[in-house]
Image 1 (tube, rainbow, N blue to C red):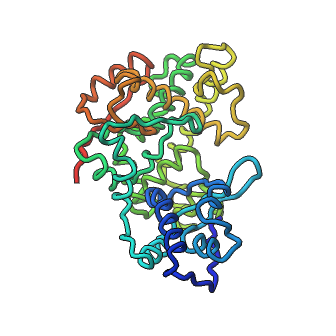
Image 2: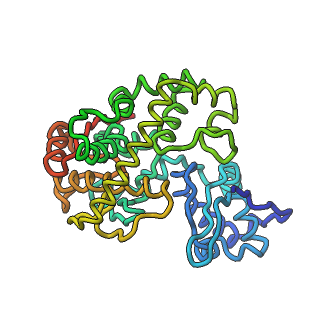
Length: 363
């Protein structure tokens, strides 16, 4: 649920130095929200009150209603509402107090300059099994400006690659004579662009949406004509296109194999838990019980496998002197390294065969 906070007829006295100072302070605070326009940020009500003042009073209410769009839900003692920046309101307030409207790239350069210069090392927090730092939210176009001259390394088809190998290994224990139990999934990984083009043509969507569609299929989003179903919404709630996708021979085979792949991935994780190996299941030793919901269980298995690979990459570079930024399924580094060398280290230390693509960032 998304809610634009209600505007009021109140108009502040911009000539009042105290009000002008408050507006500028709030605009400075809003800067980081420019970096994640499409990703709502969970913000505690205490922080909102500290920055905007009492939102039940005219000025605080006027500021928040112009600058914030509220999303998500609130659960006492568990999680706060999330917010995204209202671009129109941001530009309006900048104009009122004669503040130059900053681009998201300019905000990122100013905010993360110490890290880019090497004066600071990013401090990651553990978020859902992943290492997290706000710098990871910088949009792709802005990364070219922020990390100009750096190298961007990405693990190709990370989720599908790792889960496929994890499930295949467990399947092979029961059926060692079967070379490839999930051929459509293997094609999904090895012929990524061809598969996405096929999905785009079949579903009648552009390439960018075909990429989203492929991810939804990977995590078993249902092909159901219902508003709550992500694939149905992606297709503009078009039943004809949905039916065409469901009846496609390759899609049918892929969906069937993905279901079987995830079943064996879960069985592998449960088996590792029962045998109490060093890493208890795919998710690691810190997770005592698997999530009750299958969708969350699948996500947790992937994140656990991804973390093992990213930990190996971090170790290869040197945990204390890592020359870059860890992303979820890749990293950005000042150093120009050979992907082959990193891939070999990951294979020998984790058993997972990955493919890393590399791009020199520039604008």
